Length: 194
Image (cartoon, rainbow, N blue to C red; front, side, top):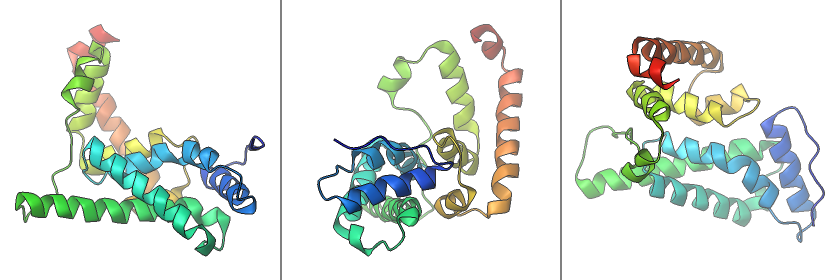
């Protein structure tokens, strides 16, 4: 049984602490790290335009690579950045393979529509919200997806994961949320749904 993690200030610090515990004791499961980081890795993979199943495969691959190469990561605090970079690179590789399989030469087309089975289970308010989220630019969707799952976002890691300058993350987030708020305010279905 593992000791509960203390609560460092950032996701990167908590991930580093969980990774260090895993490396220090080979009997310590990696579960704490997996629970902590998988949501942001999954959204990083989805942000590269992958469908749900492909994103899940990419995240699984990133975890396998971490287990295989855990001893090569010198600084445990770097594990979150390492996982994000690994996930992003693997997502690019998988997306390119999908495009080649379909014979596409143009830029990737992100998965912007929810799975029909998942859509059927959403209430009206959620349907309206997600319709407006899917209308945002890919850059906004990727940023909001990742930030939504990070309690205290580490802008340096987000910059690396999303390929955005650190200084543009906050302003971009503000503009994306403003666009979403404006779209929701202009939609009469949102007022009746909320």
